[in-house]
Length: 239
Ligand SMILES: C[S@@+](CC[C@H](N)C(=O)[O-])C[C@H]1O[C@@H](n2cnc3c(N)ncnc32)[C@H](O)[C@@H]1O
Image (cartoon, rainbow, N blue to C red; front, side, top):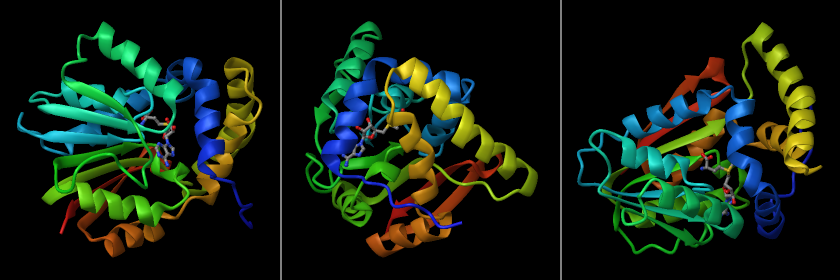
């Protein structure tokens, strides 16, 4: 089936996340039946933290992956969360205050294609369900290489279209019919949860995305299929 183009203009995407920020966490956990927490735990575990690492959580949103990196045992030593949606960052900052983590996690407003972080200054980068939304993915991947130290680790969680015959039919019905309706009513936003299935269909296949990572300079790229292939954890090292 042909895939309709989806506008990922930065102003449009940032505005959409600004509009749903207050309900984002609630809907995230509801629509994934809480399994999203497990995916984030797996992503952080893949970094094999030792307690000394400085981690960048790009497209941090309300900071759940950043917080997971601090809750890991051993945890990251410091996390910087970067996102271009001011409203998502404000919700995240409230969570950090409640969790007494403001001295260990910094939230910074910025774009994935111009990351406000110095060259070779982080040991690991995480991105949870964010790279799909970035208009110029190759530019963002080049930025990841720039900010990572040599040998630095990458863990990216992203949705994918599953290929298992029976499950993919169920998945198509849930993501295209059920999820946008629930999302529209509960987020009180007409377009954001219609954008979700459209952006998943329009996103690169796992092979295409791994090629983008390889061309950017990542090595040992490995995709782990979660939830029968509807979510993929990509791990890699800066070569
Ligand atoms: C689906 S949310 C994911 C939030 C969080 N990482 C999580 O796991 O729940 C995607 C986030 O990516 C951010 N984002 C999308 N494109 C971006 C870009 N080009 N630069 C910075 N942030 C971006 C959005 O503002 C949004 O907060």
